Image (cartoon, rainbow, N blue to C red; front, side, top):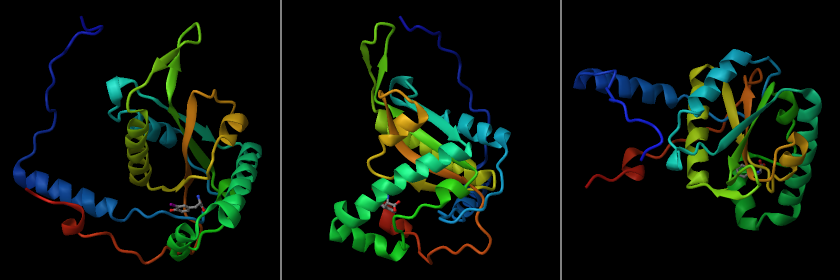
Length: 222
Ligand code: IYR
């Protein structure tokens, strides 16, 4: 027996083919403006807008509907500073020792290094955690299914919602990220997934002149 009843599902929006073509094209055009930004202004973001974006992320599909994600919204300057220090320590190791030559070569065009000032400048760091397993009242582990995929889906929807609200984001993954559990006091069954640096671009920010792969390159039709 299902623990909840099944209710009728109705498609609430019914487009003609022409409307659907127009909608899909204008959404693609809009999403194609999204760029990852690495220099942020300190202009504040609206709490209410962030909350709506998080609610949107929470609508993502997830394995067995377990919704295995947790979003920790950090705006406190002291916490941001701690996160920056933790991330820069890992990044220094990465760039100076851990990263293989091939990886450094792949990053070269982006011009990234171990300095991460945006972690303090940006008004909002959304630290996304993946719930690897649940815990019952007796601290027994409860299995989660497809938690990595599910958290990735929610993250993609969050990035989309942030773009839709006129803000920009940067997916930042210092590695390893365990220091985030300590700084943010999050239990170990939650694994840091990525930091979504969120806000507005710094004045005069530039982005690399990259192109996206063509449809032929990313899709096949059989
Ligand atoms: N985490 C490092 C390195 C890095 C890795 C990838 I893959 C990128 O697309 C960008 C950076 C950093 O943030 O600098």
